[in-house]
Length: 467
Image (cartoon, helix red, strand yellow):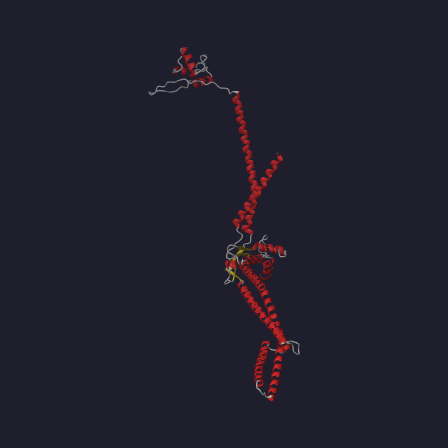
């Protein structure tokens, strides 16, 4: 309205002041209607006037009081503000580019994860769930025990009856059951290689008909698992096959091989313990027989059964002759004491005394001097006594050797080992392998780990090259 009347108003309040100073009431309805109805005013001026005539309606009785509003001048942004707005727009553009790059990288990472991790895991799961041949595992447990050595003392008595007494045998049996010899015996008895060469077994687990012995042994190691528990002394065995009954047959055959091995070890141990004792006994027996033969030879050579008997007989004869000689000497002395001795009676008595003395001398010479053979009875007695003492010594040594051999036999019997089956092999009624879910998860973890390692290595190499 102020512009209509050519008044230089800078605001609503200034326009009201100038109009009232000019004698025009800007809030009078007639003036407003006249202004609206006049055709000389342009549409633009009418809009500006209408905009300038906006007012607030105040009052409780319904009377409207219109108050002018201040016209805010158009503010032109400063150079700093424009620079800040340009910087903000550049930041927003960069953020949009980063978001696009993140989306592209996320898509590329997802594709790589699917190609290197997801797809191999899917293939592994497909193999385990669809292709893999179900295998049946038969489990068995047995222990190697030793006969109770009654009266065992020391450390042997402390360890007897425990798993430490047979740990070496258990380890030896475990090694034998995992050897190529056991695999060859199982193939000869139960056709192990032919079983795993059947066409119904999947190609990964199947053994080629013309496979080498090493390839068959790898299949044997994969399907026959032997474990020894040193804390309990139990050997645990798991045999896997494509048929439950075949798996149980394989397990029974391997237990039989273990029993044969235990018997072989026991027999070798007993033979080693008995060999020395038996040789010592045989040597003592031969020496005793030789000593007895020497005594017999001496008896035959000297024609004397017992030197002690011969000495006893000679000494008895000498004693009797000495008694007769003493009596004759007494008689002769009595005759000589007479005043007129009888010579006819004295002469035979003197000859008898001489004969007795000669006989006594002869008998005494037999004891200490050699006779026709040049060997005295004393020497004969000495040799016979030495030979007989040797015989007694050899008999004592023979008795000791026999006792040692019996002791060794008893100890060998105490060393007897035997195999006791605690868990018998029973054919399973459900397939044990493959464990599809567990194996698939393991494959996922393996492929994820490989991808992570390759990615980290590539990132490190890229950073080193760019640096």
